[in-house]
Amino acid sequence: MLIGEKQKTKNQNKLNSSSKKLYIQSYGCAMNFSDSEVVASILEKEGYVTTQNSDDANLILINTCSIREKAEQTVRRRIQTFKKKKEKKSNLVIGILGCMAERLKSKFLEEEKLVDLVIGPDAYRDLPKLLKETEEGRKAVNVILSKEETYADINPVRLNSNGVTAFVSIMRGCDNMCSFCVVPFTRGRERSRNPKSILKEVANLNDLGYKEVTLLGQNVDSYLWFGGGAKKDFLKLAGDQSVETTDFSNLLDLIAIANPKVRIRFSTSNPQDMKDSVLKTIAKHPNICNYIHLPVQSGSSKVLELMNRGHTREWYLDRIKAINKYIPECGLSSDFITGFCNETEEDHQLTLSLMETVKYNFSYMFHYSERPNTFAQRKLRDNVPEKVKKRRLQEIIDAQQKHSLYRNQLCLGRNYEVLIEGISKKSNTKYFGRTTQNTVVVFEKQNSKIGEFVNVKINNCSSATLIGEII
Image (cartoon, rainbow, N blue to C red; front, side, top):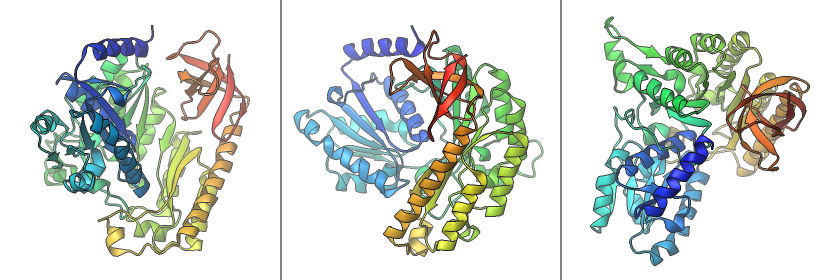
């Protein structure tokens, strides 16, 4: 029996005997899904068992995202679907976690009458106390941001685990203050987690049979351990030669050496912080995947300055050049926001030309939506018509599909090591997995098993998927 199947059986036995049942739903980035695992661990100590059926639950938590307006609208609609459940089950408690909770704070209780508690990303340890308040008939709120909290000592409950891949959070918060982004306001200042606790968690996952970990942070290249606290406070210690530090390249090196049979990925990088030392470390270790997600947002230096991205088009392309130098055939992906304030047609064409130069394996693409209280909302005009935004976005999507197909076609006839992650959605006779470049591969099962590394020859492809056979 696979690790994931054993865990499911164990959880089902607990669920059948438990009177405290937690249903938790996550939206947004991988950090939110990782946070939900921390929340499940905290509540497990209070006797709660997670269920995948909201009808069974007496505690429903929604881990929210505020990065785009559409994400918040999705959450609000989801809250409304729980209205009838709450009417039928008087003891049902509904809570809002994460970035949206932090942004709206107590206002959420007024806007969404169904919500009983609101908890920000740094207040999850306070959940047991807040739940007691709801049991006494009071609404509960804690959205205080922290300069210290990293949840380093908490062993996350792996929700819906396949027993093969897992997230490991290495830092929290962001100091970059991009003009369009709410993350610094909802997740606070950058602070890094003690490397010893990270190594311990990865080692534990290795012992449990996990084959791949993804190191998470809003900006992993900015990881810096100097004893704890907000990264900005390190500047006060900069002249103290006795302070020992661990940066991201050091951390990658430590994890790769200690866990040679575990694949290592990371997300997300920021162009202004990506150093050659990180690229050299990736090249040095075969178990660090040859894949980098490097968001650019725009190909225009003018727009990048308005976005307060901290880099220019030229700087970004220099980082791409360095990646290709140290890690040939590295898989590359990016983020794009089209239709940002004052973006002209010329700016848009610069984005398309940058895409043509890099030819990403895949990308995440959106048109700009104004977020409350950001610098862009307060000081810039959202002056690109919606129709133009949508047209430009479609042109970016079309370009990316062309480039994705181009990258995948280069793989035809070649052999790749693939980690089997699960059964293909389209066929029970096939598995899917990913190459070191993070490209999805589908192939016939043969005698292989989930969690194994197999060599696959690529025979066909689409813009999204490689199709092959085990050799």
